[in-house]
Image 1 (cartoon, rainbow, N blue to C red):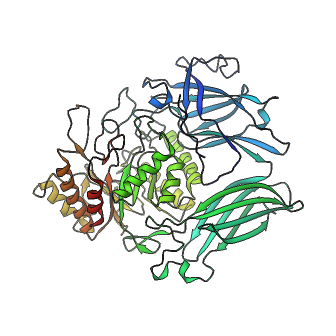
Image 2: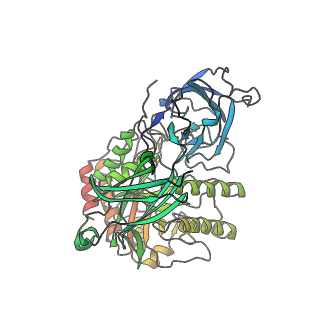
Image 3: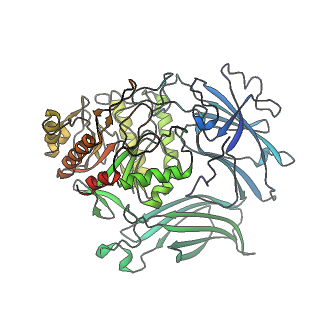
Length: 597
């Protein structure tokens, strides 16, 4: 098997002492649910197959590549423990496991985690046995028939169809070990304030000694700009650092982009945090991170980035790969997707029905690419589904709060999981709950609460409209242009038979964006191929795309758009790139269309 994913998986909170556990694991299906009863988690239980972690068994890169239904699966491998001092701990990390995971170390269950897209960690030190070789076992339950868990685009039928794709079960992000001291930095939250020129740090440190000092160093382009130390009297530290330091050229005034983060100038600050024993002056723990000075807000119906109006030209990105499904084969694939999108003239993406790997967000931060972040929806509206989504979003925020590229949270999409939101007060309250949850946690980003239609309380009026016709004389195109003629026309239209706002809610001057449009696909001979609008040639596509973008960009009332979509995904063929990332069109022409409008 090929071992592909070996990069550090958590770039926003990085330590040097770590061990990658990706690669070949033993594996088996448990269709009769016998594993717990027969104690498969014991070390001497053999498994019949092998799998290449972190790729799910349904994809080619796993080495198994079967799309059969197996709701319960097991993983097992041995790992070597590093030599630990009495003051050190060994932490086991899982990037994401879909859906319910039970973790066993040397035959003992040490953790159960529910949620298919968010990370979890375990201090395995108390469960280690004498010697260097330890046994790690994982039972995963991903029930196909349960419609109360977040699924996103994963199809519940045997074969993918339309906008629904092959399901993914089990480990799909990196597994790794990390050595920390008893005293260590547990978490870091960074909140830049562009208007004051300060950065607020919220740090949680596990300390047992009042003679511990926290050191902070901030670098910009390898130059030290801030250095400070503070005593760790309490486990939670909160303080602000002045970055501007009375230098006007660091503020963004006079059109200077020095120090600011944007797609055009993705300037990043590097952060180094250290815990130091005062008595011995010995470093106890060290963590590196980074941040960008950027501000996103809206006023008078306009979205501003760094206090200047900013028109968003986004592309819908579903984050699937033909050989890895939800998991990119290599880290460079994330960078390539972003680079190709920027090459086409897009300044960001709307990640759709998937919480993406932190490595994608890292490259978006580095390369300068806006991200609207969205996680998977549930098909049904029940108390259980609400709890699952609520818990997911809390973990999403904690994982991704420091990424400057993320400017918008999207908790709901097209009323998925809230099908009766137009009239149902409970579902309306649920949409408002998610909106207020995210706003209460984070005042540095916008929230699009039910992207597409039937919106309640929201920071953005986000409209989906694929009906724009094949040519300028098409009645659908004339109707599409009419909707762009005024805010009243935009918010009073029906999209897919749904009003823009739910009953009892109305437009309140929010910025208006068309956050799904286009969806043009080349006609093929495959009966299963699907797109919103069939196009016969590259020339016809470029003409239609130019007409669409020109109509959107010349409207005085639309503040941005999101084109569907970046790549084909399985049978859905409306991508600008094929599923294996080959351009369908001259990227320079697409860039020129986007740049000239």
